[in-house]
Every structure is written in C-alpha cells, then in structure tokens.
Length: 409
Image (cartoon, rainbow, N blue to C red; front, side, top):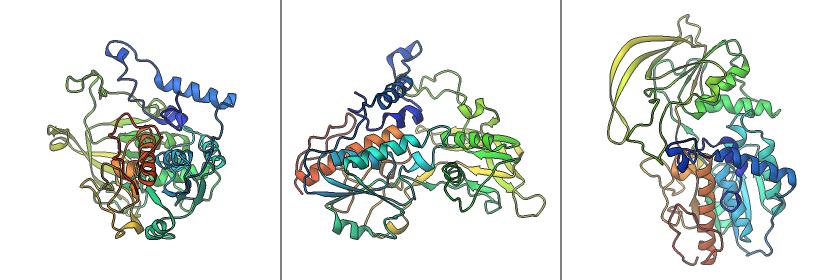
C-alpha cells in the first residue's frame, strides 16, 4: 500500500517533517496518528521480510529517457518510467547516487545504506546509472536530446541563498551544504577536498530550518565548544494562530532534535556583519541586531523595529543555512530553458519546459521543498513523459495535480 503512492517510503519515513500528522483529523483536539513512525515500521519490516524486490518490466517500449539528477525526484521518475517499459539512464554530477539523500542529510539522521539498497533495486530492474557526469559540462543538453527520446531534469535547487553582509569573505564563514557534504563524504570514507571542522570552536548557524538543525547537530558531534542557531524570524507562538487553522501546519514553536541535544537558539536576530577582531583574516564573531518584524498579507517581512542594536555572538565558524534560491544551472545556461520569476525551471501543465521533450521535476521546478513532494513530482513527471512518448499511460495519476493533457509525440 505504501508503494502504491510512494516509491521510497523509508526516505520520507526517516527524513520528512511529517506535515501529514497535524493534518490528521485527530489533531483537531488530540494527538494525531503517528503516520511517520508507522511508515518507518512498515517499510523496515518489508525489507527484513524480503517483501521488497526488483520489479523489472515484462516488455520494453523501445523508447529511451535520460533522467538528470539522482535525488528523490529523479529516482522516482526513473523507476516509474522503467516500469512503464522505457529504457532509462540516470546521470548524476556527484560521485555517488542519491542527491541530498546521500550528501546532504547527515548519516546519523538517515543511513546511506538505505539509499544504496534502493539504487541496487533500481539497477536490478534495468535502470542504468552514470556518476560524475554534469549535464551542461561533460555532456550537453543538446546531445542528450539527440540521444534520448525524452529528458527529465531533476537537478534540485542547490543554489544557496547568500547572506550579503560585510565580512562574508572571511575564513570560517561557510555555506551549510559545504559543511554537511564534507561531513557526509568523510563518514562514507570518500576523499574530502576541503574539510570543515567545528571541533573546539564557537559555531553560529544562520538559519532556523531543517538544514540549520542538521548543521547544529553535526557541530555537536564534531565537539564544538558552543553551538548557536540563529533565525531571522520571530519566535513562533506556543499555540496555533487563527490564521493557521486545521488542517494547515499549526506554525507553532517546537524544539528541534538538534537543540534537544544542546546549544542555544535566538529568534529575531538580523546579521549585520562578520567580525575579524584580531586581523588574522578569520571570523571571530557575528554582529547582529535584535528586531521585531512587520509582515504583509503574504507573510513576507516588510519592515523592522530594532529592539537591540549591537548583539555580539562569538563565532570561529559561521554556517549559512539561509535556504536555496533555485537550481544550479551552470553549464545549462543558454540552452533555451526558461525560468520563473522565482528562479525555478519554467514548465507547462504537461510538466514540459520550453524545450520539446525536456521535462522538469522536483525542487528544480517547484522550489525548495521536502522529500515527499520530490517523490510525488518525480512520479508526476514520469506519467507526463509516458504520455508524451506513447500518447497514453498506465502509470498512476497524482492526487494533487491535474493530469497532463494527452497528446502523441
């Protein structure tokens, strides 16, 4: 039943923040069903009992599809297309398959063997994988379009959102994903070109989201002297606001797993500068102001009231976890792809980009989101590609998006 709508229940069961639980009807006035725990228990039992096996297609269609990116969206798209009988090749720019599931989420939060056994399953079903291939550099998109009948771009949204303040170029001011990727590579026994250690340092994480929490927890495991997570937003309320009624997320305060392990958190702090107080070219502290924000009807910050003007937080390592601004296009720039105002890949109702036969799925098309959305996007893209190639499809339709229009290639 889990596999009917989700190719990789362990991916969501272990890493998803479970927005389904506050939407459970019991959550109106009681504790919700523990959907995430149940999902984990079922899929773990499935693997132990041998219920999860390769399911290669009975026959091949003669069509070929290239999937660019091997995160949850790319892998889900590849598996669905392969089961429809198409020959699928997955291209990944990193040296391992899995995207952020492999090199983004910490190992202590999600064991990488869970990715490896799914990749092995997909390979046994007939999917071909190529690592160390960055489409747009080693292999052009034009060449892919010539070699394959369709292409799906599931390249994620890993272009980081920067914090443009004085001192950004100081040594010790790092992007969160560089820190997490280096640690994941170290844990995997893979060479790390530029190790980033928090051992014995005062660490400040700028960003109050899941990536920031992962950085904080990783800093704990490195043996940081102190660890502080800073959010630019106000502290969420303890009780659900009337503007966030059930079944929407309550948007209330909750302590993260990382803060339960230790460290401090600050809300409403706006970073002003990274300070080099001894002139050695390395960061020594974060200078910030404590503020109260005004918001517009869409929840965007509009103005601020300064409550405290000079807040100094010691820091020899600053990790910027301010989110992502869109896909890293790099060599794909100038290929004819169009972007939305939000810097995502533009696509039509059939999930096709401006380039015929080239589809987009996951964070690259919808912006930074969670694993369950990525898997759903991959499944939707596979259905759209199957329709594009054959004029019809037996792949299951999504419950959340309109069906792509039927048309023949």
